[in-house]
Length: 365
Image 1 (cartoon, rainbow, N blue to C red):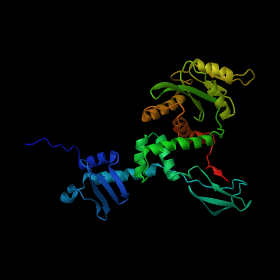
Image 2: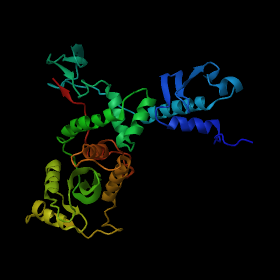
Image 3: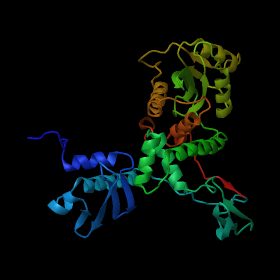
Image 4: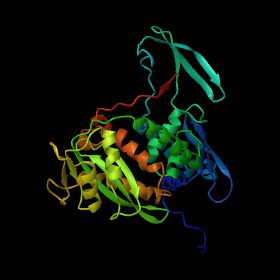
């Protein structure tokens, strides 16, 4: 008996799932029509949906009348796309008042046409001034929902290529390279906005450092977090851990919060001690207190700060290291942590919500 032919492993459903998990094996023509790549040569089978179920023009389905691996791959792809739709909720921007007099009496006042697309204009019925919404997406080929969905998937832990696959399930064809460009552009836009906000943080802050590889070189990310709201206040990248001056980090945090902490909790790193004395300590009351004798357990542990370190480490694993110290990924993840990611310790709120911060779309006249 000739046993040199390849052995078929798994059921048709298992093989269909394997096809769907590969890159660029399924082309979605519409919700009822797909093309599935032949696995051994450059050929595509047509899989369509009819009143009696899914049909495929492959020999396995036409000859035996069974549900072939190509149909299973499409079903798996279809179900995954529906699941992605359920998990991703992007709220539309709602214009509630006039940007000049804050009146709620508004009406649409035509469309402004330009090379980058059509933009809705509004008129205030009280001050009679007109303005339009400008959120930074106007010159983009893809719509805001595609961009924000991609960024939410990525900062939730997906890789660039997996984000590309998830977008394709939603009918959005964009390369992972294009999406990488989105990260840089829109992280900068968001950072410019959130940097103007003043979070209502508590009086106890925590600082810690975590090592990260940048193109193979070991560096350290220093981060400062509010103990009460878990709001990630400030961050900076340093070349070394023991000789780093953390005063710049503390000074930035003080400017962002508009105050200094009553209590600062860190490990025994000398950089924290020296920076605390120069930036937070003062002779007059109330004096700030520096606790640098943290333990693995008990009241003086640093578990909350270590949680952020774990999030960063998980993100780094997906990225397989960062490329440069001024990468937009770190501030992007800081924004994701503060404004999008909910925390069980905050009863399902985001740190920004715990700080009584609310984001609104940027509007310009």
